Length: 312
Image 1 (cartoon, rainbow, N blue to C red):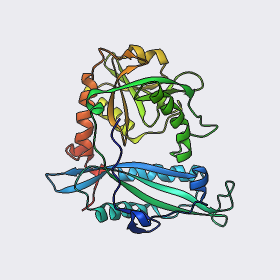
Image 2 (cartoon, rainbow, N blue to C red):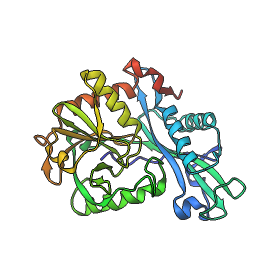
Image 3 (spheres, rainbow, N blue to C red):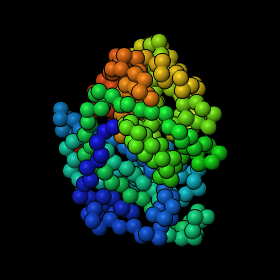
């Protein structure tokens, strides 16, 4: 997996950039007590050539954040445009000159308990924090995953379409099991036994030269990075990607596999349950998708110029 984000000295909290040590939220908020929040994980990429930092897919992330708030009946504490400007204000305040990973979180504050959601019952707030984040060798050499014994949450219980902090309890259980058993991470199956996703990222595989993704009804987050990689594959190879149900045993006979997301970007998978994927090395399509993804996210591919937002 990629390394952890290095914290910065300044965060954005409820309308103001403040020193990290002064960014305090009450322990009595529903966010602190019950994980009542929705959030987005985002990337910004530094360009030496243009001497600027570019936030990748900012508007798409804001759109998904507001969808999560709608499902959770949260009253947005700020407009979409205000949060957009807050992201840029926070990045400028930290004077980043390198690649950054950060989170934009909207939370339920103090109020009428876990049943409350109306603005006259409970307050809402927002914060932004993160920092530089570099890759480790697994981004180049691949991950060893297992299939978890834990099953994926479902749309009729705790909908994965909502990017909510509380949903990651499901992922935490699977990740702890995987690490205890010597794996890098886990793949979680749906209650029906089909492939859903990894603990914090979407899963893609390659079979007979075709990129395959579990469909959005397989208990997955509607990943922005996943959508981009499917588009990049189709544009590069002139063939449609497949979005469909994926069986567990398809993982074992796949030619290639990778996980993807804002944090993981496009990270290869080289084995599942100690069965090598393909020849156990990073495959050519995965390598090509990595190159295409970074070219798009860094603004080198002009087709994605509208998807990068300059900070400075």
